Length: 141
Ligand SMILES: Cc1cc2nc3c(=O)[nH]c(=O)nc-3n(C[C@H](O)[C@H](O)[C@H](O)COP(=O)(O)O)c2cc1C
Image (cartoon, rainbow, N blue to C red):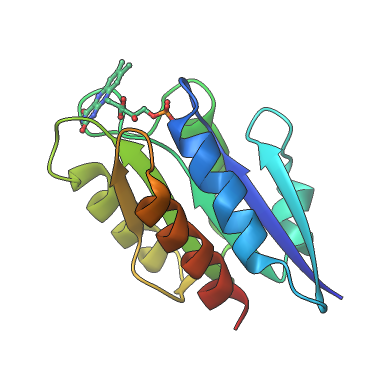
C-alpha cells in the first residue's frame, strides 16, 4: 500500500472541505490515505509519505497561516525533495499570489509537483469539490 498524507490548516472549514475531497480522490485499492490537520501532523508523516498533499488558505497578506502552517512547511523543507506533491487552498479576495509563492517554494526545495496547485474561492461548491477529488486522483496516478 502506498501512503498518502493529506495535511491542512483551515480556520473556517473551507480548506478542510477541500482536504476531505482530495483525500477521497486519492483513495484507491493500493493507497492508504491519512487526513490530518497540521496540528496533528509531524515530520514523520511527511517522511513516510509516498504522496503528499498540503492545503492552506490565503492568510495574512497573501501568506500561509503563520502560527501553525508556516512553521510546519518550514520544518519539512529538507524532507520534500523528490516527493510527489500537490498543493491546494481556499482564498477570499486576492489573486492567488500566496499559492504561486508556495508552489515556487516547494519546487525550489526539490518537490515533484504532480499537478497545478488548486485554489478555490471561499467554500468549494460541487464543481470545486470535483476538482479537489481530481487533484487527489492525479496525485496518486
Ligand atoms: C486573517 C485573514 C487573512 C486573510 N487574508 C487573505 C488574503 O491575503 N488573500 C485572500 O485572497 N484571502 C484572504 N483571506 C480570506 C481567506 O483565505 C478565505 O476566507 C478562505 O476561504 C479561508 O479558508 P478556511 O475556511 O480554510 O480558513 C483572509 C482571511 C483571514 C481570516
